[in-house]
Length: 157
Image 1 (tube, rainbow, N blue to C red):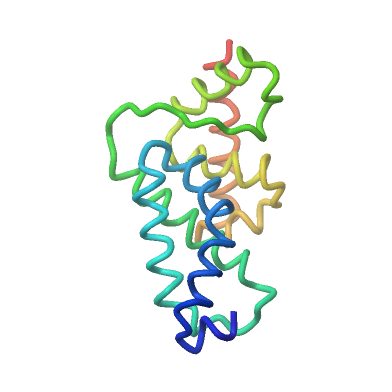
Image 2: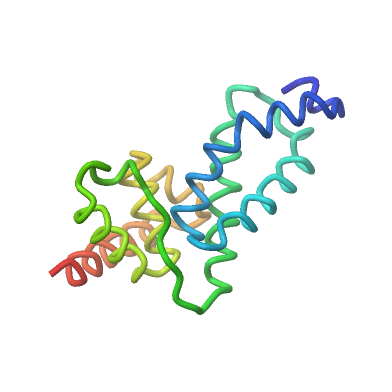
C-alpha cells in the first residue's frame, strides 16, 4: 500500500488485483447489472484517494465505504429493471431454486434497501457501521432496514 501511495504503478496494479473480488461482490450486490461500471468508478476513487489513507489496516473498510456509496449512487440513477447476479453467500449455492427466489426478491428492492440489508446481514455490520458507511443517521438506517425487511417478507410470500 505504501508503494501505491507513492505512485508506484506496479504496486497500485497489485492492490487493485487484490481488491477486485471484494469490490466486485459489493458492487454486484447493490448495483446489479451496473457492477462493472461501478467498479471502475470505485477504483478511480481509490486511485485518487489512496494518498490520504493513513493506515494500511483501514484499507478494506475505506474501500467498502467507497464501493457501497458508488453502488448506491449508480443504482439510484438507473430506473430500469435489471437481473440480479449470483450472490453465492446468501443461500447455499446447492439450492438453486432458493437462490433464484432470493435474487428475485432482492431485485425488487431499491438500491438503498439492498445496501442496508447486505451490509447488515451479509457483511454482518452493526447499524452504527452501516450508518457511517452510508453517511446516514442511525435512525434512518434502522427505518430503512425495517422497511427493507418488510418489503423482502412481502415479496417472499
